[in-house]
Image 1 (cartoon, rainbow, N blue to C red):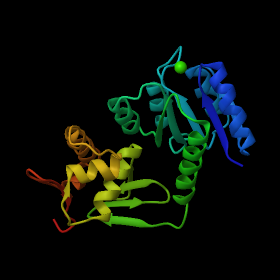
Image 2 (image 1 turned 30 degrees about the vertical axis):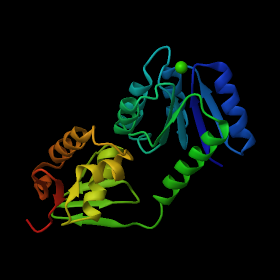
Image 3 (image 1 turned 30 degrees about the horizontal axis):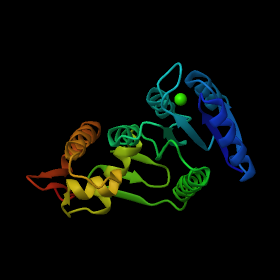
Image 4 (image 1 turned 60 degrees about the vertical axis):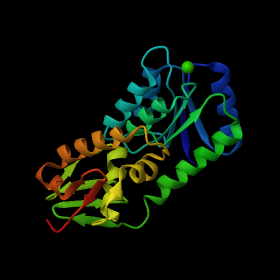
Length: 227
Ligand code: CA
């Protein structure tokens, strides 16, 4: 049975979500502040966190950042639940490592579907190990681990997806638009700098091994293991 932690300061909404999750067979816990939510997550790591962005004490984005920095919790699935439906908020949430984003008001049915989909995805990632490698970089898809010359490099969920996508499509140029759509799930051309920013950060984290990510001027990026 999966445990879900609901971090939400609107009592009525938290109650409604909790009621429905329990009816669907989930174990739940609720916290009405960011600090309370972090404490509960640390006391007993949940399988998934439903995280409101507008909390009375710590901003939800900060809670997410702290979850992702905690070695025990960084692989916990997170769905942001927020009234902030702007695409920039969505992008920011996903950049911070959230798995999905649900905009208020939402239907309980939709939320349940998203919860199940995210949990299914994290289960699948625990399946048989597949290691993708190029140059000094190796990426373990099931353990969500990246190593450079055997040393672990800690990446955000988004950087991980970006690197995985590049590795899976080695030697093939990926346009910014394709990366945005496949890594970020966004169909738009306005955020193309987002891709550049993340590629830059990913290269920095990978050190000299990151040189195999080539910039294809005016087009996008390509991972070239032969360099
Ligand atoms: Ca709130």
